[in-house]
Image 1 (spheres, rainbow, N blue to C red):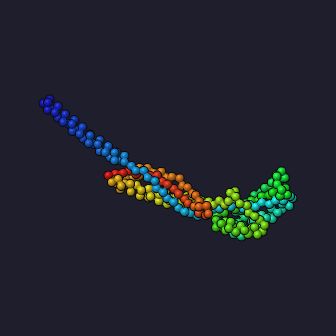
Image 2: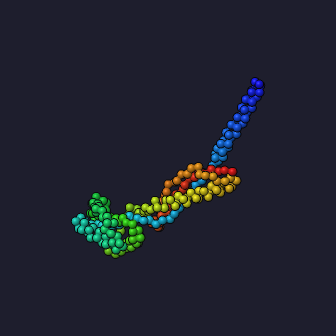
Image 3: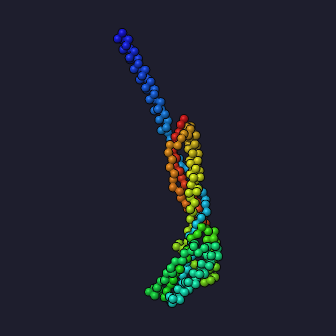
Amino acid sequence: MKKSTNWLLAAALIIAAFVLGWALKMPVNKLKQYDRTVSVRGLATKEVKADYAIAPFGYSMLGNDMKAMYQDVKRYNEIVVDFLKSEGIEDSEITIATPEFTDRRSWDDRSGYNFQVTSVITVGTPKVDAVIKLRNDQSKLMDKGIAALSGWEYRTSYLYNGLNEIKPSMIEEATKNARAAAEKFAADSDSKLGKIKNATQGQFSIEDRDSNTPYIKNVRVVTYVDFYLKD
Protein backbone atom coordinates (compact mmCIF):
# COMPACT_ATOMS: atom_id res chain seq x y z
CA MET A 1 0.00 0.00 0.00
CA LYS A 2 2.83 2.33 0.91
CA LYS A 3 4.69 1.55 -2.36
CA SER A 4 1.56 2.30 -4.37
CA THR A 5 1.14 5.65 -2.62
CA ASN A 6 4.77 6.57 -3.26
CA TRP A 7 4.43 5.66 -6.92
CA LEU A 8 1.32 7.80 -7.33
CA LEU A 9 3.04 10.73 -5.59
CA ALA A 10 6.08 10.41 -7.84
CA ALA A 11 3.89 10.28 -10.95
CA ALA A 12 1.97 13.33 -9.81
CA LEU A 13 5.20 15.24 -9.29
CA ILE A 14 6.45 14.30 -12.76
CA ILE A 15 3.18 15.39 -14.39
CA ALA A 16 3.17 18.64 -12.40
CA ALA A 17 6.74 19.39 -13.43
CA PHE A 18 5.88 18.74 -17.09
CA VAL A 19 2.81 20.98 -16.98
CA LEU A 20 4.73 23.72 -15.19
CA GLY A 21 7.56 23.54 -17.70
CA TRP A 22 5.13 23.74 -20.61
CA ALA A 23 3.31 26.67 -19.04
CA LEU A 24 6.55 28.53 -18.46
CA LYS A 25 7.81 27.80 -21.94
CA MET A 26 4.89 29.53 -23.65
CA PRO A 27 5.46 33.07 -22.33
CA VAL A 28 9.23 32.67 -22.69
CA ASN A 29 8.83 31.83 -26.39
CA LYS A 30 6.41 34.69 -26.79
CA LEU A 31 8.84 37.03 -25.02
CA LYS A 32 11.67 35.95 -27.31
CA GLN A 33 9.43 36.71 -30.27
CA TYR A 34 8.95 40.28 -29.04
CA ASP A 35 12.69 40.73 -28.58
CA ARG A 36 13.00 41.14 -32.36
CA THR A 37 12.55 44.77 -33.38
CA VAL A 38 13.45 47.12 -36.19
CA SER A 39 14.17 50.84 -35.73
CA VAL A 40 13.32 53.18 -38.57
CA ARG A 41 12.95 56.88 -39.30
CA GLY A 42 10.07 58.53 -41.13
CA LEU A 43 10.51 61.89 -42.85
CA ALA A 44 7.80 64.40 -43.80
CA THR A 45 8.39 67.75 -45.53
CA LYS A 46 6.04 70.49 -46.62
CA GLU A 47 6.49 73.82 -48.39
CA VAL A 48 4.50 76.71 -46.95
CA LYS A 49 4.36 80.44 -47.48
CA ALA A 50 5.30 82.81 -44.68
CA ASP A 51 2.32 84.41 -42.95
CA TYR A 52 4.10 87.33 -41.23
CA ALA A 53 6.82 89.75 -42.28
CA ILE A 54 9.06 92.09 -40.30
CA ALA A 55 10.68 94.59 -42.67
CA PRO A 56 12.97 97.45 -41.58
CA PHE A 57 13.29 100.34 -44.04
CA GLY A 58 16.30 102.46 -43.15
CA TYR A 59 18.07 105.45 -44.66
CA SER A 60 20.96 107.70 -43.68
CA MET A 61 21.88 111.38 -44.24
CA LEU A 62 24.92 113.57 -43.73
CA GLY A 63 24.94 117.23 -42.68
CA ASN A 64 26.35 119.95 -40.47
CA ASP A 65 23.20 121.45 -38.93
CA MET A 66 21.58 118.97 -36.54
CA LYS A 67 18.39 120.98 -36.24
CA ALA A 68 17.93 121.13 -40.01
CA MET A 69 18.77 117.43 -40.30
CA TYR A 70 16.11 116.58 -37.75
CA GLN A 71 13.52 118.44 -39.82
CA ASP A 72 14.70 116.56 -42.91
CA VAL A 73 14.26 113.25 -41.06
CA LYS A 74 10.66 114.15 -40.19
CA ARG A 75 9.96 114.99 -43.83
CA TYR A 76 11.65 111.85 -45.17
CA ASN A 77 9.87 109.67 -42.63
CA GLU A 78 6.54 110.96 -43.92
CA ILE A 79 7.62 110.04 -47.46
CA VAL A 80 8.56 106.52 -46.38
CA VAL A 81 5.31 106.05 -44.44
CA ASP A 82 3.26 107.22 -47.44
CA PHE A 83 5.21 104.73 -49.56
CA LEU A 84 4.36 101.92 -47.15
CA LYS A 85 0.69 102.89 -46.98
CA SER A 86 0.48 102.81 -50.78
CA GLU A 87 0.46 99.00 -50.50
CA GLY A 88 -2.13 98.87 -47.71
CA ILE A 89 0.18 98.91 -44.70
CA GLU A 90 -1.65 100.47 -41.75
CA ASP A 91 -0.40 102.86 -39.05
CA SER A 92 -0.70 100.11 -36.44
CA GLU A 93 1.77 98.01 -38.48
CA ILE A 94 4.41 100.76 -38.68
CA THR A 95 7.02 101.57 -36.01
CA ILE A 96 9.29 104.61 -36.34
CA ALA A 97 12.47 104.37 -34.30
CA THR A 98 14.12 107.41 -32.73
CA PRO A 99 16.64 108.89 -35.21
CA GLU A 100 20.25 108.03 -34.36
CA PHE A 101 22.71 110.90 -34.71
CA THR A 102 26.45 110.26 -35.00
CA ASP A 103 29.14 112.91 -34.44
CA ARG A 104 31.73 112.50 -37.20
CA ARG A 105 34.02 115.35 -36.19
CA SER A 106 36.58 113.01 -34.64
CA TRP A 107 36.67 110.84 -37.76
CA ASP A 108 39.47 110.96 -40.27
CA ASP A 109 37.00 111.96 -42.95
CA ARG A 110 37.34 114.44 -45.80
CA SER A 111 33.63 114.51 -46.65
CA GLY A 112 33.19 117.81 -44.87
CA TYR A 113 30.13 116.65 -42.93
CA ASN A 114 30.08 116.77 -39.14
CA PHE A 115 27.01 114.67 -38.46
CA GLN A 116 25.25 111.59 -39.73
CA VAL A 117 21.67 110.58 -38.93
CA THR A 118 20.07 107.20 -39.48
CA SER A 119 16.34 106.57 -39.36
CA VAL A 120 14.67 103.16 -39.39
CA ILE A 121 10.97 102.54 -40.02
CA THR A 122 9.88 98.95 -39.40
CA VAL A 123 6.82 97.18 -40.74
CA GLY A 124 5.35 94.19 -38.91
CA THR A 125 2.41 92.72 -40.80
CA PRO A 126 0.71 89.55 -42.02
CA LYS A 127 0.47 91.20 -45.47
CA VAL A 128 3.44 89.31 -46.82
CA ASP A 129 2.69 89.98 -50.49
CA ALA A 130 2.53 93.72 -49.79
CA VAL A 131 5.96 93.65 -48.14
CA ILE A 132 7.44 91.70 -51.06
CA LYS A 133 6.11 94.32 -53.48
CA LEU A 134 7.41 97.17 -51.34
CA ARG A 135 10.87 95.66 -51.30
CA ASN A 136 10.79 95.31 -55.08
CA ASP A 137 9.62 98.93 -55.48
CA GLN A 138 12.22 100.58 -53.22
CA SER A 139 13.55 102.47 -56.23
CA LYS A 140 10.53 104.73 -55.86
CA LEU A 141 12.11 106.06 -52.68
CA MET A 142 15.33 106.74 -54.54
CA ASP A 143 13.37 108.89 -56.98
CA LYS A 144 12.46 111.07 -53.97
CA GLY A 145 16.02 111.33 -52.71
CA ILE A 146 15.91 108.52 -50.15
CA ALA A 147 18.47 105.75 -50.54
CA ALA A 148 17.35 102.69 -48.59
CA LEU A 149 20.09 101.07 -46.55
CA SER A 150 21.13 97.47 -47.21
CA GLY A 151 22.84 94.93 -45.00
CA TRP A 152 21.82 92.03 -42.78
CA GLU A 153 20.24 94.32 -40.16
CA TYR A 154 17.86 95.68 -42.79
CA ARG A 155 16.79 92.33 -44.21
CA THR A 156 13.15 91.31 -44.09
CA SER A 157 12.34 88.44 -41.73
CA TYR A 158 9.59 86.19 -43.04
CA LEU A 159 7.93 84.03 -40.40
CA TYR A 160 5.52 81.10 -40.44
CA ASN A 161 3.16 80.83 -37.46
CA GLY A 162 0.81 78.10 -38.66
CA LEU A 163 2.87 75.12 -37.50
CA ASN A 164 0.23 73.82 -35.08
CA GLU A 165 -2.25 73.54 -37.94
CA ILE A 166 -0.06 71.26 -40.06
CA LYS A 167 1.62 69.28 -37.28
CA PRO A 168 -0.95 66.42 -37.07
CA SER A 169 -0.94 65.67 -40.81
CA MET A 170 2.86 65.86 -41.02
CA ILE A 171 3.33 63.51 -38.06
CA GLU A 172 0.86 61.10 -39.66
CA GLU A 173 2.77 61.23 -42.95
CA ALA A 174 6.12 60.72 -41.21
CA THR A 175 4.76 57.72 -39.29
CA LYS A 176 3.38 56.18 -42.50
CA ASN A 177 6.75 56.60 -44.16
CA ALA A 178 8.43 54.96 -41.18
CA ARG A 179 6.02 52.01 -41.39
CA ALA A 180 6.70 51.63 -45.12
CA ALA A 181 10.44 51.45 -44.46
CA ALA A 182 9.90 48.92 -41.67
CA GLU A 183 7.64 46.77 -43.86
CA LYS A 184 10.34 46.68 -46.54
CA PHE A 185 12.91 45.59 -43.95
CA ALA A 186 10.55 42.92 -42.60
CA ALA A 187 9.88 41.56 -46.09
CA ASP A 188 13.61 41.42 -46.86
CA SER A 189 14.21 39.44 -43.65
CA ASP A 190 11.29 37.00 -44.21
CA SER A 191 9.44 38.48 -41.25
CA LYS A 192 6.17 40.25 -40.64
CA LEU A 193 5.76 43.64 -39.10
CA GLY A 194 4.19 43.76 -35.65
CA LYS A 195 2.95 46.56 -33.45
CA ILE A 196 4.86 49.71 -32.53
CA LYS A 197 7.15 49.19 -29.56
CA ASN A 198 7.83 52.88 -29.06
CA ALA A 199 7.94 56.06 -31.11
CA THR A 200 9.64 59.43 -30.75
CA GLN A 201 8.62 62.57 -32.57
CA GLY A 202 11.58 64.59 -33.72
CA GLN A 203 11.66 68.36 -33.59
CA PHE A 204 10.05 70.39 -36.35
CA SER A 205 12.36 72.67 -38.31
CA ILE A 206 11.37 75.65 -40.45
CA GLU A 207 13.94 76.94 -42.92
CA ASP A 208 14.02 79.15 -46.00
CA ARG A 209 13.57 77.11 -49.14
CA ASP A 210 16.38 79.14 -50.75
CA SER A 211 18.08 82.51 -50.46
CA ASN A 212 16.10 84.09 -53.31
CA THR A 213 12.63 83.37 -51.93
CA PRO A 214 12.94 83.58 -48.13
CA TYR A 215 9.16 83.89 -47.83
CA ILE A 216 8.80 80.25 -48.95
CA LYS A 217 9.52 77.95 -46.03
CA ASN A 218 10.44 74.30 -45.89
CA VAL A 219 8.92 72.56 -42.85
CA ARG A 220 10.54 69.25 -41.87
CA VAL A 221 9.99 66.61 -39.20
CA VAL A 222 11.52 63.17 -38.57
CA THR A 223 9.87 60.52 -36.41
CA TYR A 224 11.78 57.60 -34.86
CA VAL A 225 9.77 54.38 -34.54
CA ASP A 226 10.59 50.89 -33.20
CA PHE A 227 8.44 48.05 -34.55
CA TYR A 228 8.22 44.46 -33.37
CA LEU A 229 9.02 41.74 -35.89
CA LYS A 230 7.30 38.39 -35.98
CA ASP A 231 7.48 35.20 -38.05
